[in-house]
Length: 241
Image 1 (cartoon, rainbow, N blue to C red):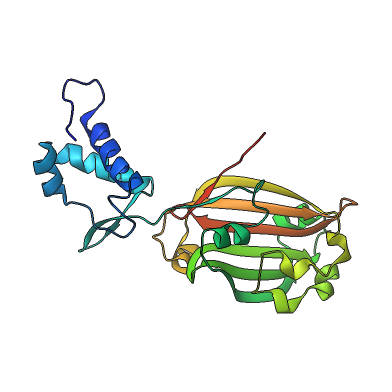
Image 2 (image 1 turned 90 degrees about the vertical axis):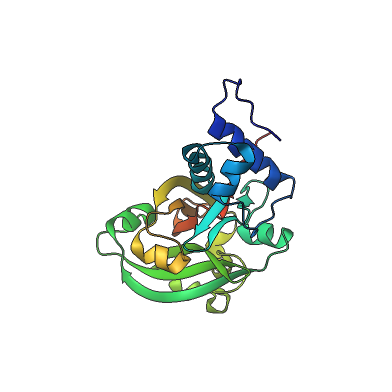
């Protein structure tokens, strides 16, 4: 394919679209190295600045990844999770042929931070069971989950399910889970140093921050979850009819 120099479309954008097409068609597969800046300059007769802009945008969008001293590679595809179609991320990962997993990092009982107390409707000084876990896909960390449960409900937790199945399986023994509803919010944030280290990304890398509140049929909160998912590996998709 050639670059149309008479087109009003910027040259860098034309190059970017042609590279994306190679990825979509499978000519460039996840993990493949892409041509160097110099090779792209020569192949398309473009300036170094133009090539760099196209590559930089694709890296920023998570389609390419750079490895210092090694080159630029096609990134692994993002996991697209539709919470309306797939009730759990675990089910979606399995449908994609991946093995979902959970790794418990820590569990403790603490005085609820102000935000947590407000979401769980606890009084000042109220205590919670706090659970820190990593979400894995084929043993690769893709998410960091922190769950808070009112201490009064903690005795009903299924501790054998903390690192098995879905992220809410440990709550299934609670009678309050019958007929529960879920509230979710999603926003884009930058990774801080602690979660960047856990998720094997650079500090400041784009992340999806997800908050989930599970509420019993009578309106009483059961669990408040704060999760961070890697922006280069996770994409939320909502299908409405």
